[in-house]
Image (cartoon, rainbow, N blue to C red; front, side, top):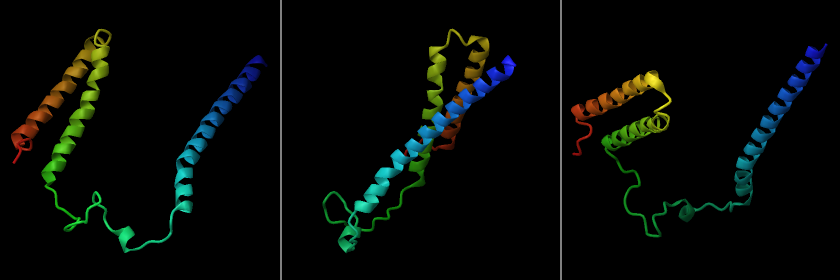
Length: 131
């Protein structure tokens, strides 16, 4: 009998926790959407050629706004993001270096080897050379 009461109390506490998370999620969605709805209701509804024109630092726009970029710039950005995110994993490892043991050291050594291998691959393919 006591185990049933304990189980019922635990179940009620769990439902209470889920309810709190649900309330927090609803408040977060309302908090994010309410300014968008208010802005849509209060915005001026008059659209014209001047309002639709591209704005360039207060100066008259010159030329076509569609400019082609070299794909190489995107490759630089992608390589930077990949290495930046991977380096983020090095910080917690460096902080806990004394506690990770030999398994953690071997895992991070493999990880660093893969980073170095991908850097060498990019270098040999000529992607890192600025043209």
